[in-house]
Length: 143
Image 1 (cartoon, rainbow, N blue to C red):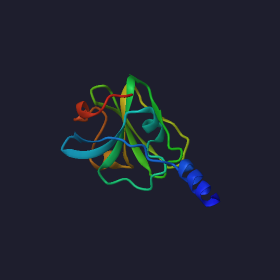
Image 2 (image 1 turned 90 degrees about the vertical axis):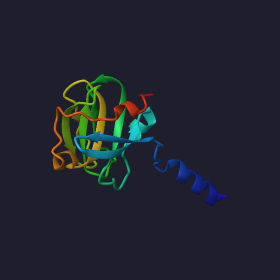
Image 3 (image 1 turned 45 degrees about the vertical axis):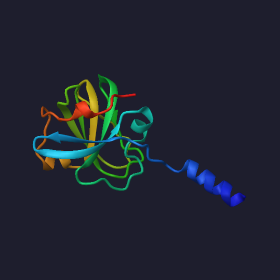
Image 4 (image 1 turned 135 degrees about the vertical axis):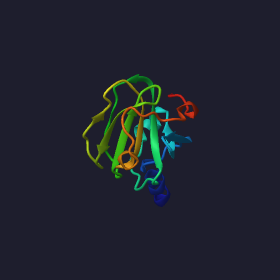
């Protein structure tokens, strides 16, 4: 009975992966896949405790209304770049984020979305503020 109780406590306390829908997005001639964090539990979990992320995979955070948002890397092991997007999907700014830090990285304007990709993904593809992400109309609304 003690072993069962231990296993149950371990499973309940282990970090879980929130189930998120996956969508294909596009910018310029680059197509990529994102998990969509459109619920509060999914936004809180984000990419915490993950050990890797596919080369053209990322996470899209969907917020209920546009405002200035910040992201940080607590309990996140993967170095990431984040692009903050307005309601139309236009990139406001891009910031590089180092693993397991509490440094906040904020949007420079009212953002509706935050797109996290592997560190350097945007630079390697010459993607800059002012460019627009396509496919956001297929993304679930924030809950």
